Length: 421
Figure 1: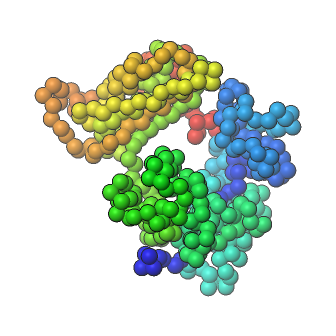
Figure 2: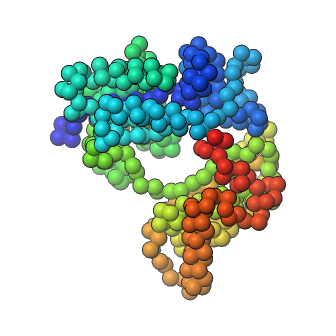
Figure 3: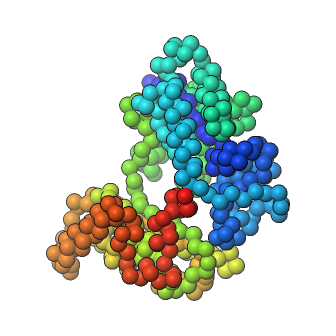
């Protein structure tokens, strides 16, 4: 494995409980001693909690739960999400990073997480990675009052895993992993989904092969992983050995091409039958717009419904079309076909649509039973609508049905990240 190892000085910084810490900073409060949660209680008791302070985390409160799952504690402060404020803080913190490294040596992973390549800067600062990391964390705290944690490694993967697994437990909030730590620290990780890049579905699939720790994944035959998962299997094998050859300033970073497009929406009252078909129609419009923007068509349509907590259950079903499409009408009626077959009349609280099995837009499979001229006209029409919305705003053109009481599209189009700014 030595030939695949790179030796750089990468740090991965995470802004601790970011949304909750911003709300505390804005109020002049200490997130380590303040019981604050970021959630919009005015929507319903089932609203999602976006973040909780480190103080509440230490008390066992999960950062991603529902309002009704929070402890019955009158001292808890509820902060309504303010996405524009969080973006403002994120921008200020990015400006801090740029005081220490150039833009080319920074990879913004999310609104609260970033990778910095310090390889060419350590001699300039005449400091170790830990010392530069501590200097940056101190600057962030002093300037914005936002606490942060940091992972350090010879590549992006190990710096990220050091951040996720160890930094939060470190007295300095900084943890460093090297290749020597792979057998002692990386291989002991279980469950597998605790490893960056392994989701719950992949964990389940690997468990079926008898793989339950990263060490077992590292020692599983590579050829069998390639047989089961192709390139993904090879990547999993190398990651289990701490191998990652991404270089930030060469832009070889984690930007996987989309293998699907999807959208989910939590509803704030019980929906039934016809009302939900309106939601499905609006979500189909958004998903097909993303397909067109990505120059893709989809073969497989997935619809998932989650019922209210009293009814419990729901379903997650898909169907595969004979011909790929990015046409609203075709995808919408495919969703309705699934809906009509599996919906049992229970009150619905969440709707998700996903399209997978994608091909390029220019891919055309001739069909004697379709009017290809009409297909082209539909595509031009919807592309024109996309352009108008891009120029004048998402609410510039709406379906007439979007004016009904069941519709949520007008309100959602004014939100940032699913919340009012």
